Length: 144
Image (tube, rainbow, N blue to C red; front, side):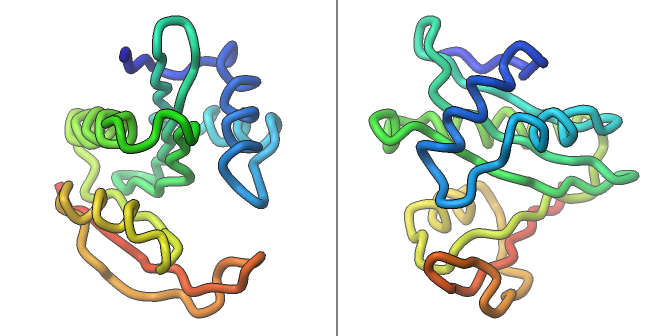
């Protein structure tokens, strides 16, 4: 597996991954808009030539706000998400971000465990944040 910086040529693949992973996927336009932010960090994982996952963080001043971490189902539990997050954390440190923060479904135990193993701590809860089904979001933050 290889992790590369995501470019405009990868947006279509990221949107396809979104469709397979989420009830309310981001569109190509939304992804492109997020990627254009100054200092934003978007990474894509490849197995051979196949895009298998991506992660993105929008940067505001020295703060990182993570959008989605998405990995195709057949590649989950194989270290793809961990590799993407590890590289994201390394790049956030290079850019001297104070922290990265994210929301995750409270029922998504595998994701919560991954984030916690990487040093993220619960900073709060957003009631009824998600739809289909309605569910709370855990707000997790990692300080650099």
